[in-house]
Image 1 (tube, rainbow, N blue to C red):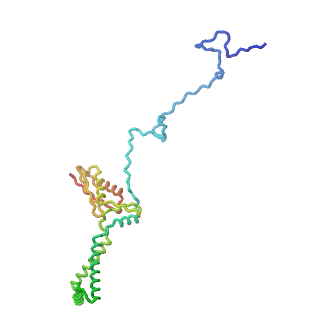
Image 2 (image 1 turned 45 degrees about the vertical axis):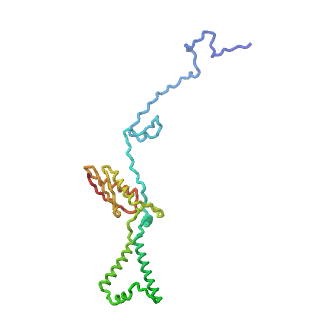
Image 3 (image 1 turned 60 degrees about the vertical axis):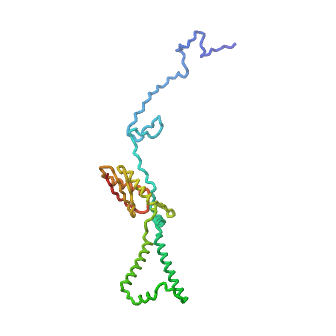
Amino acid sequence: MSRQVPDPEEPGPGPRPTGDSTDASRVEPAETAEAAPTPPATPAPPPAYGTAEPPVPAAYGTAEPFPPAYATPEPAPPPIYGTVAKDASADRAAVRAFRPRRVLPSVITSVLMTLIGLLVALEVVSALLGRPLRLVPYDRILSWATSTPWNDPRVMAGAGLAGLLGLLLVLLSIIPGRPTLIPVRTGDRDLAIGMHRRGFTRSLAHAAEQVQGIEHARVRLRGKTVHVAADSGMRDVRGLAGAVREAVNLRLTALSPVGKYPVHVSLREK
């Protein structure tokens, strides 16, 4: 005959506890051992100002703190665009590319030499055929040359005139004239870039007009000297000419023309 052992979890035949009451004699297995007391949480210390690494804001999760509202960053200076390293060979190539061709002196010289050569050829050929043209009275010229000494004023004047003409032709071929385009530094001898003189001076005048206190500016290029004539409506113009010169020099640095262009500023008050 088997005996049924009552379940310890199952309540006996006595009165059952209601939902609002608890059994004080009932002990849960997990609560048999006394739990260790939990230490109170230590509050985080306030952030110290001026530390190298401030705490990360929890709302944003960034490593770097946001700048305060009153800290306005300073504007970065405008970049100097177009600045090219100086290359002597590239600069010489650009100058040669935009050097004026001296068309008018070349045409005049070539026409004169062609006429003289044609006249000499006609005289020689006609004399060989026995019928000289006598376009040039060389018989009288020869008699005058043989009878006139070298220190004669007419001989000296003619020799001086011929020497001056020859020297003028040599100078025209050596000295560069006024270029139609201003060569710009590129740093590459195979690449030549030029600016029109009008566009170059307009750019410099625009840079001068950006200076506070300048109402109008005119720029003229004489040789390689930049002459700036600026009009100002201010009464106190101390330091204004220097500001205009600095602005024009910055624009010259940005354009990077070949060679140096000194700036001369004349300020006129209204």
